[in-house]
Length: 165
Image (cartoon, rainbow, N blue to C red; front, side, top):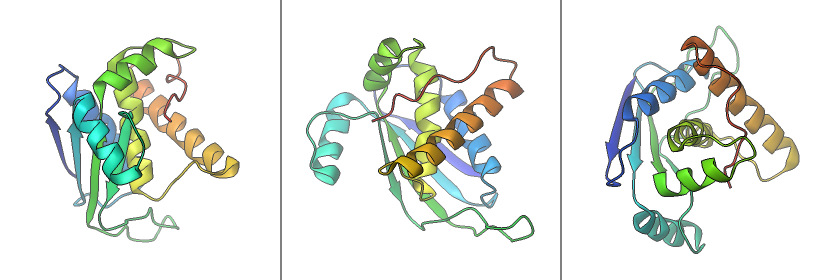
């Protein structure tokens, strides 16, 4: 799995954890090991520009995903996963820090960025949360991936509750 993490935000973030949880999420979703993903960490001004340009919405957001080859997890266990460019995930640590502090179960900016990384991966794989059933599926899968990753590392407790918009 080729995953690049590029921090352009000026904020110190745990890039290794972002890389590790992205790799874990892609493995859990059975994405081809030669697929490629890019994660870019930007400041609030850059995120706001992207949010306006691509979503026509004001202000910065927490995470945006830009799919390339529209890869999907294989439908059956014996099915070979497709290989390709997953796309880009853009994260904003300023928004993540605020969301983590305001969450029902307060957590750190880095924990929020890990959650947002998984959220971004799932969006790249075609998951969405516009409808209640889609939201239940996506957020359930997101929690299972984050919890599994945390358990493998011996981290206490369940993953932070979803705070993504």
